[in-house]
Length: 97
Image (cartoon, rainbow, N blue to C red; front, side, top):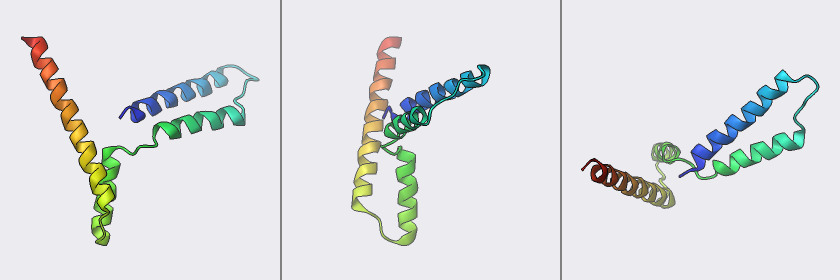
């Protein structure tokens, strides 16, 4: 679940590196450094977010062939999110009492 946030953080770091290069003449980012940064971001995004799974489901419904594996992934992810949401709500209620 943290892949999206981690990828955002990595993109911010990469962007800051690129901005810093603009400020210093003669500095550059090697191809290897750039490839390493992109690889790290891709790894963080390896697990598609629920929204992407829902988009895939919509696409598959249009073709008439819905993958049972995709449905299982969506069910699992929705249950995880709902459970987390309930836990967070319970924690918030306990803190306010």
